[in-house]
Length: 418
Length: 155
Image (cartoon, rainbow over all chains, first blue to last red; front, side):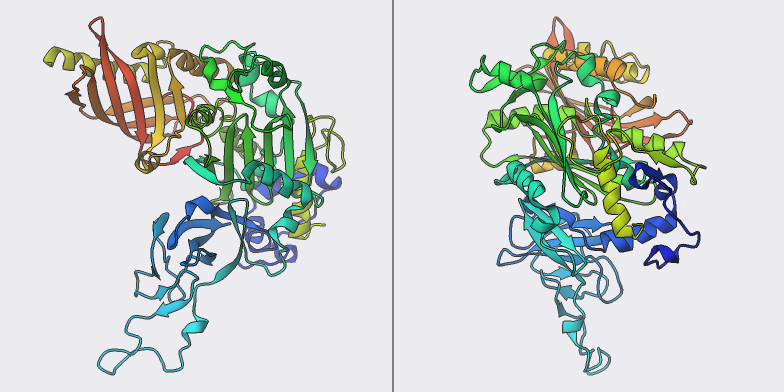
């Protein structure tokens, strides 16, 4: 299936009236739309998250990932430079790197032993000149034209991004000022890996892109905080949208922190002093920043989010694995200069999120319920009018779907709907 | 050793059967008061990374997990069936015991589908208290880093 624009759809599609306040259910289940997204979004003018810099700290390190469904290798060369290539041998198309992570001087395809350097250049072809003067490649075969397909790469705040498009501006302009500033706040110093796992969620990837921007559902679906009477559900907070609306930050300030500061002991306190937890150490936390923000989630178009819940810092990456299947990766990190006690607190608070997250585990199934609920209703549409119909930052309330409308603003533009 | 060994084997099997039967209120009681429970991946264990998928420090946190599961968390109800391998049990120099037991857990969902949910091994440190064995530390090491849908019942 080769699709490049909406005009190529066998069954034409127009967006319902109401713009980004109406979300056609068809977008979650139509294989043609899914194929078009691979072309226009993942191979288009976006920065795709590839890996963390700490995944490939040393020369020769490589890590495999995917951009949309395309297999990718990210590498670090002898000089410390970072590269990214499609993990597809230029000969027969076989995967070149089979392991998820490794270290190598050359990347060699096991099928016919063609080998590539860490920047993807073809360096060796087995039996290139044949054997005993017979066989081999034609004399005019130009190895310089048969390297691995490369992506343009940029690193920003320890994140490695890649793009297939020449039109994508620098990462910093792609994100815009408020987004890059907040990324620097959260990831702006050397990181330390704490652990990773993933979760298969049985829904279209865009349902998670919406979910992660859905500040409206948080205290309705995720009732852990209310059940345990952990106070301050009416925390101050807001939503900041990128100028082009593609990315967002949702943040909250837990006032309890300020009060508890008066009881400060080694700058650490029990944030849950009002709760009914039998194991209150779960929420022991320290103030990481002076801006009062204690909870934040930042989504970066198309499929990345950075979460900072109390002291739990996590890079969430959600990868389409088919029209109704998504793999959600949880990369938990701390800072290189964390004390042992701080690391222990980050590990403890890891209980809040992830596949078994006390606060977040519902997201593992809720998007699937939408996927299943909309079967047979491809002509219908979801609503996103909470907080109004505009697509603007909201400093008054998080009971809004403005960030979801922001995602669809970006989606409509890049897909050619608007 | 032999009577103790039998008691430890009984602990490990009773733990699994209780979870399979949905009898989770008693789950923290299988642990010492300050016992720990960790679900982690083989990959993270090998890399020496501290962070797993679930971590409880003490019976209080375990009770919170069960309470959250019953009263707060929302998910499609399902059941587990544990299949355990024979435990390898060794006594340590400080009088506690170590046990290693392979497991497979089959999960059955509302639509009737039964499928392999988790495979791995229990790495246990067990202490005798008043003649009864209890988990001082139970590490559930999953072969895969990938969880299907979500993980809410303890393994």
